[in-house]
Structure formats: C-alpha cells, structure tokens
Length: 462
Image 1: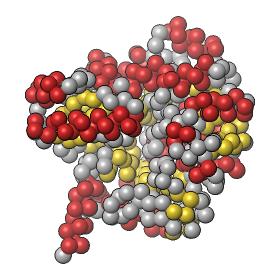
Image 2: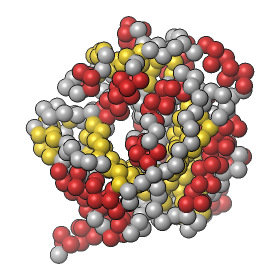
Image 3: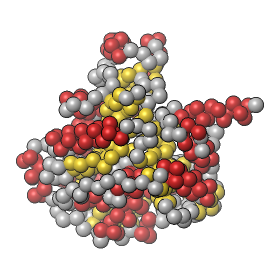
C-alpha cells in the first residue's frame, strides 16, 4: 500500500467509540472485555443458537440475528451492516473465522464510514491468496518450501508434481484451518486428491483454486506475531509453537517454542516484521511457517487475530485485542518488551473422544476452574446449548509459568478440574498429550497426536 493511501486512510478514520463485534463465542467475549477495558461501547450479535451466551449481558448492546446457519447469521454481511448502523457503531471487529479475512466485507464497512479493525482490505486480498502470498514473501527474502502456482488441470498438476517430488500436499489457495488439504504419495493418487480438495475448497471457501506444496513428514508448525501501525512501523512479538494438531487443526499452542535455537527464531521474527514494515502492512498479522531439521519455510499469513493469541499475551503482557483496536484508531506501536516465562494454551472441544467428531447437547454442568496462573476464555455458560451449527470449541485454557514444566502442570491441573457435563469433550486426550513423554521433552511435531492415538488404540486392543 502506498504512503498516499495510508495517509488517506488515516485522515478519513473516525474516532472509535462503539465497536460492533461480528462474531460469536470465546472471541466475541474476549473483544467485549477489551472494549470494556478501553472504555468503549461494545455491540454483540447473536443467532438463536447463541441466545444463552454470557457475553450478551456483558456487552453494551446485543442484537439478534435471524438465521441459525452461518450463511444466515454471522456470514450475512448486509444484516451485520444494518445492525452496525442501527446501533451507532463506528467500528467493526471481525474476530477470527467467518468474515475476518473477507476483503469485500472490510470494504463495505469502510464505505459505510466505519473503521474495519484489521489490515487494509488490500492485505486481506494479497495474503488471502496463498499462492500470491508465498510469491510475495519469497520476493522479500523469506524462504519457502518447494511449491507450485495455481493448478489449472491434471496435466499442470503432474508437471508441477514432477518438479516438487512426492510425497506432496494439495492445498486450497483461498482457505485455512487445514480444510481441504490432501496428502499424495504418488502420481496415481493425484487426480483423486485434486478432486477431493477442490470439492472441499469450493464448499468451504467459495474458491476452488488449488496449489501443490512439498510434504514435510514431521515438521514443527511455528508462527510469528506481528504488529504494524499506520505510520509504516512494524514489530514482532516472538513465536508460538503450534505443532500439536489433529486433522491439520491446532490443539495445543505454546510460547516460546521448545527445543529450537532461539537465535534462529528471533531472526525469523525480525525478518517478518521488517518485511511487513517495508510492504506497508498495517494492524495485526501472523506469519505461519514450517520448521524441519533446521530449515524453515513460509506457509501463509493470517490477517486477523489468532485463536491462540493468549499465549503471546501471557509472555509479553501486551493485550493483542486492545492493540488491534488502538492501531486501527491510528495509535503508534507499543514499546518492545521481553518474553517472560512460558505459556501454554489447550483447546477444549465438544467432540467424541473416539471419532473426534463434534458432540452436541445442553451443558448441564459447565464449571471452569479458578486457579492461580490459569486463564479461561469461553463463550459458554452452564445451561447453554452446544449446537451443530458452529465450531465445536468450548473453551481455551491458558496457563503461564516461570518454566515450561510449571505451565504444563498448571494447565493439566486446570483441565482435570474443569467440570463439563452434557456433551463429550477432548479433555482426556489433551491430558494424555500433556503427560506424554515426547511432549514433556519438547519433541513435538504435527504427527504427535496421531502417534498418541495410535498407541492408545493398540493398548485398548490388547
């Protein structure tokens, strides 16, 4: 973005006094808290399925949405914009998921005279296309693992695959969260994988574009938190280790990353911040990378707050949601801070322990623990229904300690003290991972959960 466009955006920005939160669950409640602490009014929206959410009482205003399904509620741009105007909101915070990285929605918000709390729409476009994002970051000096451009047909896929080599992974260019990814071991499986990935990408993201990337068997998933202001400055807030995943979706995150050279991580973080500053990126973003045997490769940039932002907040003392709002209002970056202690977040899902499929029902008992060094982020309360319409995330349990061992101990105790009845949860799996010898030693990679589950099934079979 040019300095002229940055200046124009800054000059046209209204003062933020009232924030519409275009989201639900834990992140909606988290944004309400940030607004309350900044002295701003908050406006929440809710579908009929979320009518019992605790943050409806904590916000300044609450407006019902007319539909149950996402497309009828939290993805209904016109309904959200109408409520924003009706409520007197002068800014919109999109949270994560839903419309958080949708440039069309961001532009509609700005065209209506409100502040979009996030990067300029041009960055939502540039980074939303992973092929373009990989190319852009590579041009700026960030390493990437071997990959292709957009795949147009099976012939172009085979040609690209020959250059990349097998195994490889087929990825949607416009999606996220691991959805649609297909690992391919040889050329015979390529055509089926392309068809499956295209179908998922088209249904989930409305964008069927695909590309190929070298498959790393046991990588570490490392991401770097970036903040950038409207004056062309950017800073890094260290790394997050996000390797503990199931179905390519994050389950446990921590900071700092154990067992990787801190100097290497620091160089990568500083490089990311330097690139963002030189490009004119603004607000908040996360650079996602893979690490394998000393090599690092850029994956994508998420142009929104992350689910796992809490671990960075705990080790830096910087409130990232408040920073999003302040930066969108034209404030300068905070002062650099050191990383202190160790933080771990686990995601508590309502899901079947065996199949890992979502579990629905009424929370007959929902009693989060209150423990020293532990923070709970949730959009649910006792008596509320967990519906099939939205993500199955019940809560995030975040623990901080002086050491990694202390943080692990605290989050484990918190999970064991978390009383949830009415739906099945993944709490037992989380505890199993936290107590696993590999995890305790810091030997984590993206396959650790599958190995633990496989070992558990073998024991059960005996």
